[in-house]
Length: 326
Image (cartoon, rainbow, N blue to C red):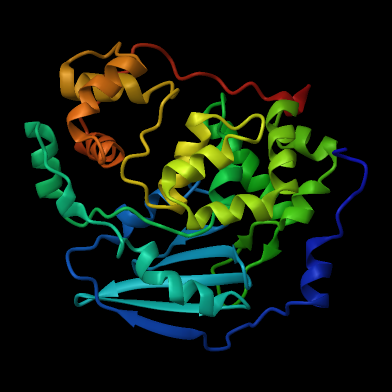
């Protein structure tokens, strides 16, 4: 039951097991992509809001990420210059992160498989040739924030993720920018008291879904080695995880080019407006418009979002509910 036990203070865990590495040099890997690559486009979907404690972009253009890998927590710094990418990593998960670096940057993705059949998509792909679909190989780090984003505004979800990771996560290994943290372990998520979920603005339904997920975290992480459709089916066995959440997860964990998000409040209208002039399109109409891109529907939706052709706002932004004040 949530709230029965309080987790140990995260800093105590770090001091007792995984020491901060300070300014110690990290492990380094240099990789040369086989085509254009824009770090912001590839890694941007992994960022959960401007204050995400697991993701940071620095003024020099480098991207910093923290992850809880099968080998333990790690920090990764990625920078691109002169046609090559340099990855530097710290912590117990450093080697794993560097081994996965090409996949995370879209090495397994095949942009040439996408054949644009709409002028807008053709122009957008031409203007943004560095778009590749990331594949992190980690399920839980995408699943938990996706659950937090269910049925609430993005501001509420980002705030909840920020509060919970900073309060229960571990400080990032290595010389990471200030206030970066590694997301909590499955056990720590399971031991977060019920009142802490409430203070973070997370209702019982979403908290319960996360608790059910972390209890079978090992089985869900196995889905990283499955085909995207099979991975989605496994995720959806957990009550509270439906097609929207599973698609949002495998888009990041698997780099799934066809995992189109259904059940979203805004995406059908955006795709409908861009490809068919219908700002009131529903999921069925969105899927009809994306049918020519079967196998690449998620990439088509990403290109629509990058095109900037979105319908104007017709109503004020939905106000956050602020359940933590109740």
